[in-house]
Figure 1: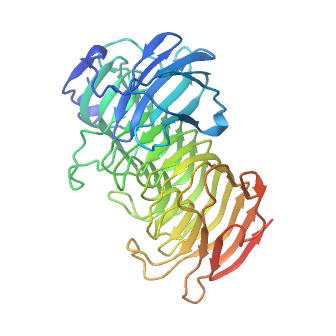
Figure 2: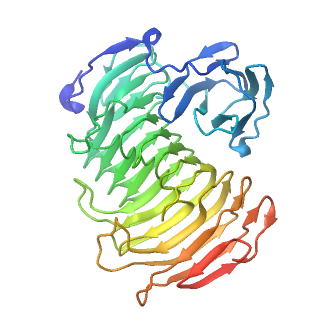
Length: 454
């Protein structure tokens, strides 16, 4: 193992699959008659499954249950119950959440993938060791590894194969063309809980890099922010799963980045699921604008802190613009009860001009906090002496398909020149019925130039 090329990686222990830790005793899963490992995290139990076409799933709940739900509704899973067993068919790429008896505790997450193509880096090699393949650091499926921090250099790839569990962290600084791939698990439960501890301070910390790909990895139980590109360009994040149960355990924080795509991810966190920020964190070169960011096809569960889809609070840059959130299922947005908390939120707490933001095709299944919460404000996170601006925001085809209709707030700042500009709401529905004005939307509008309903 070339330690100097991969951040002095040292394997503290390697365990075979038979000794795998953190195995769930609450659920048993079989797929086409073969048992699939169910692991637990602090935020829920989970299984990663590869299928070839449609497959038959059977979930056993030994302690029994009265009722269950499978979310997102869009997946259209038709399941039947027989005693302690639940049966359904599924295939392809799905991010499913199973909940029992109306409780938000102990959900079961099932992530399905199609069979890997020949040569797909997500597939298993079967080798029970780390292999340096000329720029690839590979952790083989069927084993656990305790490694600590892993550093990547230019052009290097980290692969965590399906069935592998790596206890550690990943970082890259000032690099080009780095890849983090595979269908395995990056478990951060053994990270130092002291945020002043040695770097990296976050589970996956990518700083000042260009050309970053992060695909299909499952990240669990980080003590702070989880997947964090800082001042990066050309970032592609696809198919990953993130869950955390701690305050400040944000899922994906895009900080001062340009040209970012977040596609098809599942995130359940105690704090923000997806957040866009701008500030000079740690070793980043400084406070950079946020531009050209798209998040689409994701499934989000926001637990009591934070927000589901957030811009802010840290907005210390010139502009945050050309931002698109599309085709996203917010299956839960739990109640926070403080100033923050919401499904679609812009909390401009510093000087940035936030503009040209589009939300299109967002489905909300259960929101117990604000639906829309756009504010220019001074908060405990603010550092700039002046307030910023919000303008040209469009909310299209926002559908609340379950639960109650939450209230919304659009509020500028009382300082002269800091009213919120134009906000357009088009195609808002509640349980299939159109909502055509602010009153029916339970929306409070203050210090705002224009809110138009279409």
